[in-house]
Each structure stands twice: as structure tokens, then as C-alpha cells.
Image: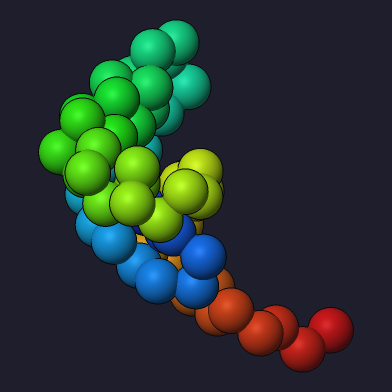
Length: 69
């Protein structure tokens, strides 16, 4: 899985996260805080709040993104 930070339609940064730790309170929040600090000047200049998305990057074997029923 990846945590991705966007400003408008621009991907600013992404980080690989541990699938098993995602449900742990504060786990993703720590990454988000680090990204906000790292890109604080860019965020301030854009005047737009960043958007964060968690994206599944690995699909288990035998599964596909599009399945036929």
C-alpha cells in the first residue's frame, strides 16, 4: 500500500506503508505530519490543503482489478 499526497491534481509525494499497521491509530497520521512539514512552503504558497489517499499497490494472486462474473 502507498500513502499519496496531492495538491490539486499534482502528486507531491508518496510513501510505502505496512498493510498490517494501517489500522493502528496514528500510523498514517505520522506520515501525513511528516509530509506536511516537509512540504510546508509548497502548501503555504499554493493556498490549498493537501489531499491524502491510501492506494492498494499489490493485488493478491488469482485476483484481478476487473473480474468477470
